[in-house]
Each structure stands twice: as structure tokens, then as C-alpha cells.
Image 1 (cartoon, rainbow, N blue to C red):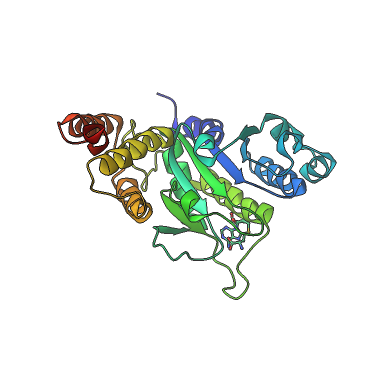
Image 2 (cartoon, rainbow, N blue to C red):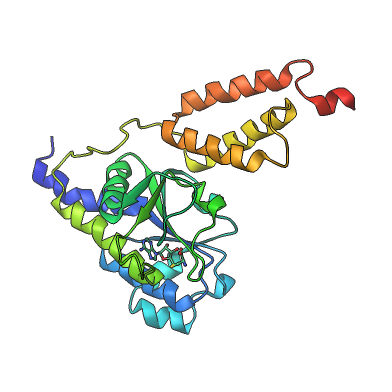
Length: 266
Ligand code: SAH
């Protein structure tokens, strides 16, 4: 058995590479560089970019200057066409926002967010999603997140620069990592086989398709229903076996005679 000290020392190498920062449609390449620096300072390395404004040429002179030696993170950053794609394999997704959203979403502060990310990284990949400089994250992007995380700021002036926000989150993660009692995973969902973000996406598509096919939902109004159902399943956090059961049920429902009006009438 490794000693507690050995486990404590191994924790950063084990957990930090499982924590991914995902930047959505960042406009300024300098902000991507500054975020890479903020991450590397705290020992984080996995940067994922969804449609940065400069496209594949995001690692330009501004980005490299602001990265200030963290260019390795820029080189290793992954590029994605959609947020869903950037979240593939993640069991926990935290969205960040400077302001409270109309749609109620479970909310954490920066400390709580750091604790969750660390605790769940013990069981698999996790992600923190940062939004556009001007407009943040859209509601359909927040719908892919289990929690919304906010850095408590001056309510009259709440929006940080994206790299400054990344720095606060990265610091929270490191601060808690070096302090963390060995084996503490108080806030984690311990089940190891939770369905990942991409598996849940497949399920949600299947669910909505079935609800439309059986006439429970109609195409015009299914947006709100889809968000409510997402919230429900974000709370439930099904594991892979449970998800297979649900998909099996959907397959049976769709297979029932008369379950798909389109097919019947055509
Ligand atoms: N007007 C936008 C501000 C975007 S700031 C909005 O209200 O959302 C760019 C990004 O930095 C945000 O999308 C978020 O990821 C992060 N950010 C800025 N301030 C934050 C705060 N107080 N708490 C959490 N994240 C914050």
C-alpha cells in the first residue's frame, strides 16, 4: 500500500490532466494565450477550443506573447466545431457565468466548483467551460452543463476578463489540491461508470426524437421541454447501465405499432 504521503504527492499528476478548460468562440487570441498561462501556472494542461475567431491560426503572435512560456499548451490545444464535441468523454461539466441566468440551474461558487472538479477527476475526465468575451455562454450551451459556476464579484461590475476568470478557477483547483486530505471526495458522485457528456447527448437526441414521434412533444415547443429533461437527467446522472435501460425503453416505445405517426401516415 502506498503511504498517504505518496498518494498526496501523486494526486496532482493523476488529477490535473483530467481537468479540461474549454473556451467557446474566444475572439481575442491574446486571451487564449493568457488563459494557457493561467492554467500552466497552476499545473493544468488540457485546453480545448471551440471555434476560436482565428480558427486553426489561434496561436498567433498575440497568443504566444500572452502565453509567456505556456506555448506548449497552445500547441497541444484541441480544436472543435461544437461544445458537445469538446466535452466528449467528460463525466462532469461546469459552465461559468458572470451573471445569474433566467433559467434556474444549480449554482456553485468558485470554491465549490473547484471542489467538484477535483473530486470527480478522481473518477474520470471533467470540464470547465468559459464563454465568449462579449456575451458569455448561450443557454443551449449551459444546457450541456451540470452546474453553473460563478466567481462572487461586485454585483454592479461582475464580469472578469476570461483569462482572469480562468486564473481564479485554476488557482481554486490548485489550492484545494495541495490542501486536500487524502481520499477526500466528499462532494463526488463515487459511481465510476457515469455516462459521459457524449453518451448523454446521444440519449437526449434519442429521447426528443421519440417524444416527437409519439406526439408527446411538438416541434415548435420542444425547446423548453428538452431543457427541463436535461436538468432532470443532470440531477440524476445515470450510469452506463441505467442509460442502456432508458435507451432500450425508448427503442421499444418507438417500435410499437402506431408509435411513429410519420411512418403510419406515409
Ligand atoms: N457579458 C458576459 C461576460 C463574459 S466574460 C456574461 O455576462 O456572461 C467572459 C467569460 O469569463 C464568461 O463567459 C465566463 O466564462 C468568465 N467569467 C467572467 N466573469 C465571471 C464570473 N464572475 N464568474 C464566473 N465566470 C466568469
